Length: 615
Image (cartoon, rainbow, N blue to C red; front, top):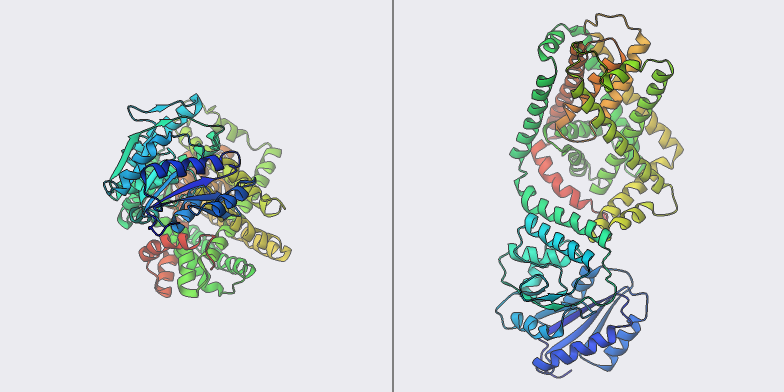
């Protein structure tokens, strides 16, 4: 190349382009030569893990013409990833890229380049949706493109008409300033660059181009639209929602959801009768219930110790019990189970257990919890069905309660709660089944499923997180001794949870004669399903969901009235939450941990737990 400095670098992202790449490079060079001085431009073939002869052709062209450079990747980086790599290696101050099929008429190249090279604009992009453009699009791509661009403008506040046209130019400094925040490395890369550039106040030129599709598009309409839709939601959350989720807002939202749940129960359920029943409950039995529940916490700490040991970390069970107390207290105070991340922060800050291990151990614990309560619910349901004790439940579920009977007006609320519990529980169980199956399979089932939905960078991230999780599940489940130990601890923990509910229920004036085995069976089933309902984090501590499911099952399986069942459900949950809060406050004082600080710090903990990190 001549001694003149390169001013313009054109990058051609190429994947399996052996039939067209040589003509594309030659056309690009000829067009650039028409309006740029010799020696001031270069063409870079960003070859992205091709499986055909594209690398060999690109190597030959680079050897024959000093204006051509070739960057090869052994694996797919995605369009955005390939562009990022090539732009970093480029020499020009003006960076350009367009699709190698030359779908955009090359007569527009001079306007594209000079818009940025002149310094008038920081970004320039061709548009197939502006007045004056000519674009012959197939119907399915036309609808998908209009829908995508409309959603981008609606949710992300963009002023661009066409975000995905593969015909763009950038000022180098401006682009790399924006790229510092761009997360996507595939098809959404273009959109995210333009949206973030607008938010930073850069000058962007969008101009009409003539565009004609050439050959088969490498965009999978279903898979990539789903993936790009998820990216729109990711950016919308980051731009619009996340900045507003302060500590004060989180607490206020939690209080609001709890109040709504209570008001709804007041609307549909006999709260006056419930409060009367609760005031008459035997305080000695309620106190015994609290004691039993408190005993379950050291077992939680011991189980967590066993899980961590299988993952390579040895820690004191007392400290781990405190960490669990703090994280569960966070779940009671903050919505969306924000307290879960607190545990990873506590064990990292106080015992230097890496964030990935903290999250992985928590995930393994959740698997055993789900499997245990599902097993308990299933076994008890089968037993009740075999003894013919589910007739009342069927009547309650399907609305055959006689009009005017107690609970006749309230069944809908409990029914909704049970359906939510069943739906969430079933979804959670299916997810656990898929994850465990993947962990025990020679095939990477997780990657296959996720890639089938989307192949963008966010999907890769999600797949990586799940893969790490399944690997940790396999580590514990693969050791028979560890599996039995953790499984046995889980069974003991949830049995004490049920005994707590049983003592609370017996503390009420039941007014009917029920055998102890029947009460035990009903409590096992009601507590298990109630906790499955809490998997959906609609309110802090699952307030409302647990009570609704518990109440409906007790009413449907026993002669007890709605006021007794709901009173027991509320008091049972209250006892457990109070024990959790007392233990959480004591643990925070003992370990010198601020809950609000832990929640704030744990936001960074999730990023630090990225499977790409080395820790």
